[in-house]
Image 1 (cartoon, one colour):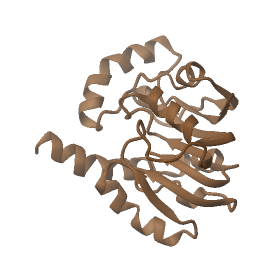
Image 2 (image 1 turned 120 degrees about the horizontal axis):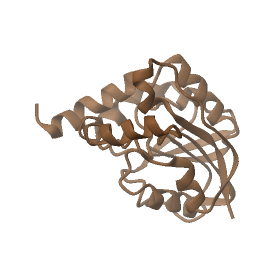
Image 3 (image 1 turned 90 degrees about the vertical axis):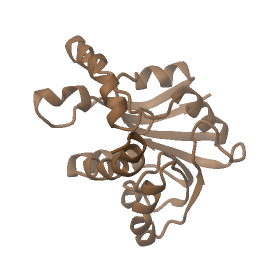
Length: 209
């Protein structure tokens, strides 16, 4: 199987299966709390956040590069009362007006975007004053031993998981981009000890000045 076929057709399906378990669903539900109005979602994927959107959400602008991921989301979009428009393919370059959205959501996507700092700047541009970013991401663990394994495994991870990085410092990206956390937590997903390079999570809500 060619690398392009694997990345374009297999990875989106594996991602859909691996990120829809009950534990991750609970984290998605918590992160989606407080979303309001017009929501920008970077990395919409197969629409796994749709069932957790609160009633105050009126519209979703979905940024999703994968055609397979977008097709997988069709049934979830159809079941939802919230209208969803596909608003682009690249979170680093949004074809959306300034100050046009009330909230932003990104889950398990900053690991794959080539330049996550640029994507976070674009989110700032598109959010209205007072807008909030809700996020749930895996990334660089605080434990030195786990970090060493994350750096060792990252080349293979990027090849096998569509460019996904294990060593993104999510909290650091927020700080360097001028985001002010309302709350941040770092739960570990359940799993065997060998899975620890993949299970350190940053979740929370942030605003910017």
